Image 1 (spheres, rainbow, N blue to C red):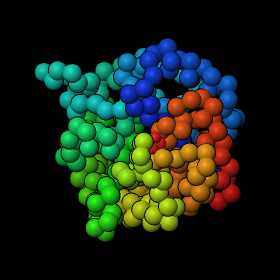
Image 2: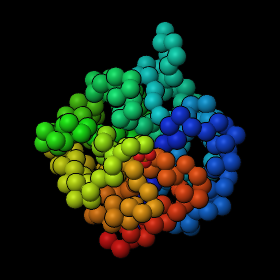
Image 3: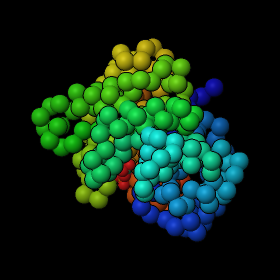
Image 4: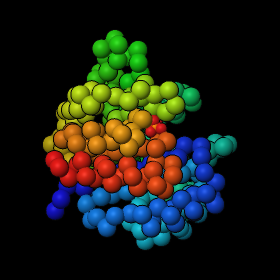
Amino acid sequence: MDKVFYFGSNFKMHQTPDETRQFIDSLRQMLPEDQSIQLFLIPPFTSLTTASTTLGDSGIWLGAQNMHWADTGAHTGEISPTMLTSIGVELIMLGHAERRGQFGETDEALRMKVNAAVRNDLRILLCVGENAEQRSSQIAAETVAIQLKVALADLEASYLPKLMVAYEPVWSIGEGGTPADPTIVAAMHGAIRTTLVEHLGEQARSVPVLYGGSVNPTNCAEYAALAQVDGLFVGRAAWSPAGFAEVLQLGIKANASL
Ligand code: PGA
């Protein structure tokens, strides 16, 4: 069987339930019939129920953008893993740079959230990446290694089939982000793979490592064509169904030439 190409989008704080339904309905008309891709969508909490119903049996994984590590409790304003699984969420994104940077999310908190995901049988998309200062101080690989080692400290190798990692350098994400040079992406993905294997064993060679950060129709093929890249994680460029489908098609084409 062909190697699976992973592709998804985090909607961040965009899209009402109605907009999410329209997005999914139109996207499903545009998707290729390709057995070797795995898609996922990560809308905001308020759109999850609608997304779950609209996605139906499409095979597209539904993800949430954050969760608390406890299943219930006095944690006002928080959403628990059991609440997410009860409405059909099967993937949790953890450690996005905006959660770390704007809300002070620590590697230690992420360790507890990873453990909560395991307890609740959620797939995990763990986001890691260095900021501009860490890159210019030449500690990018070390920064990402620490993020991985702390967040995954308690993970058992048997859970690896449910883990994905996204490399998202902070300096390349969102408005004002600079697209990363593919040589940086290849090197960082290699470093991530090395850390995963050292920490979790040979089975970690099959953990998908996705690239994210200002991915768009112009640059996506360069990233998808890298042997170290198992998929793409896209923000702004995939927030319309046509944009999502375009970057996906170009990515699949580039990846297929590997
Ligand atoms: P972007 O977002 O593609 O808009 O840069 C990526 C991300 O934050 O995951």
